[in-house]
Image (cartoon, rainbow, N blue to C red; front, side):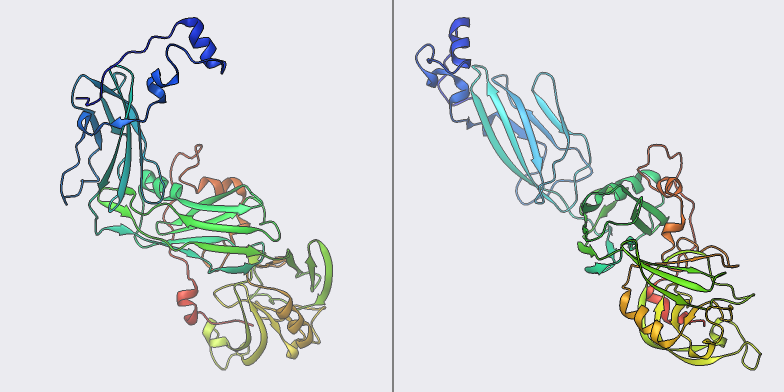
Length: 424
């Protein structure tokens, strides 16, 4: 029922054209046009299927807004949560009913703005606030790395608190995890396993890029009774493009900054049986001193290959213990032969220079070694060794993808790196 005076306004064609052209007003002035009036309170013309009082709505049930009589029709509905996220809905052709077409978020307050029109064409409006019930089953997300500046090879990671295996549920999760960079780049998430995602661009990050990582997952329905939980956003920056390429056959490392060579260093890499891994790795951390022992990588004490050495200026590139480090005991072989147990060794002065020059996220590549290629996920960040087409196939949002990636063994990471010992 409408509690405002009814009146009808007729506009002739000529007068309407004059109005649209910004000329004189028609038929008694602009106040005669219903659309120019302040919207009336449409509270008595609409109803919602949400419970009253302090009771909260069930997020598993669609929200419905309907008219209560024949005097009015709904012309528009917008529903947003506290974060400004819109929820999609559908309005019936006759304007008598509107309903949501996607699940509501749990534990969320929605502001619903309903616009109506009475039988005379006058606009009405009502704003509703609807709270949904919370649920204890939440999927939390932890992004990595921490806020800071990194090299251009640093991937972004997302660690989930619960496994997600269903392809549709994965698409919901992935679609809500946002990585925004300035300048913009082409990039994609890749499901490493059911609880881990990595994000990388098609090419390396640009230098001096600003990367903002955040989640829109909180409250969203993922599957069954599982809803998204909170996630702390991360702000990353990139520095210069620093790359170190070690040619194991030539026994040299060439270091470039933004494509220009800044140093060429004689090195030694892994000897037969301990060949250094080929491929691109990412600097994981730097340790000014590490105690390296052969028994931590399976070499028995007392064997000819056994060692127990103090090592300085060690730059880590795998969780299993591959470093670039000072190796004063092998200076005679550096630049001439490969005699290490898998690490890249150089004299102390060069190791200190390398340690001071690179940062976490910089690129360390090995070519022409007898070792296998660095794996993408199980021993650090070998993400760049996976071709882009294959990387994109690991996204739950890839339209060309027919199935999700298979479950992989959980990779070792920083949380258990203490039990993974270095090799020399």
